[in-house]
Image 1 (cartoon, rainbow, N blue to C red):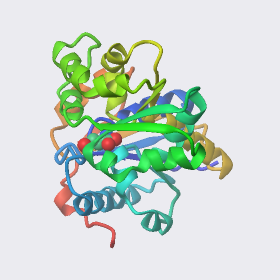
Image 2: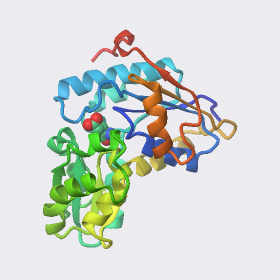
Image 3: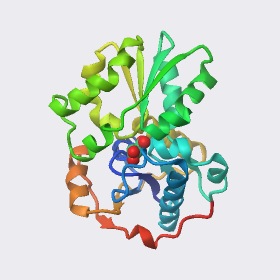
Image 4: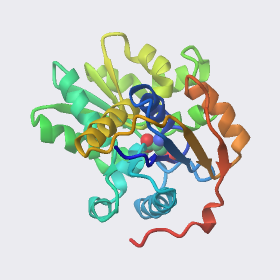
Length: 274
Ligand code: DGL
């Protein structure tokens, strides 16, 4: 039993897909969420900047006394060096490995699509993880850079015409490759699952990276004897407007933010040494 909170971070709102699931499967845990809404998106940036941002985000969460850190961001998970993660004082999990594992379990044909940010697709992280589990798997990966701003602007209704048009264009080659499973490799994308599902068709299984990461947290806390049954609160920290975040969180989390939302002046947070 460990009463310290779980630390979750993302460049913006996407990590709320992991929080949504964590609150469902681990209702007794306290959560500290950090969304770097002032610097979103990360996925269009170069690796050195993404690593630098991640070192600041992690430093902030460590300062909150968390017992585990979840990088609920496909971009950070694909870019933050494993050797840095291994040196952290608390367990660190990313979204790539658990999501690839779920995709390998879901696919029958071995034809798996991956969609993510430009940085994630450039890294080849999901394909590597999937091929480690299933060497014969055939993958097709596609960057969908407009999905993140669409989510951050609340265009998440399954029949949103702008999102539907963008999804149709991005996903046409993925559908054409005959995949039976699609990895939503950016944690923002599950918020567009309705739109993406319509574009892909009902026979394609969508793998939610936020959900799979939350399940990985549950397994890790249980294995390390760190579960807490007596909490259930959440605190949210963002680097841009708190009002805007609270309004969006109400759309992304079934019960809304359900906890205070505070502003963090990110320039005052010293990054961990790299
Ligand atoms: N939610 C993020 C991810 O999973 C980041 C999107 C972005 O900042 O570009 O990749």
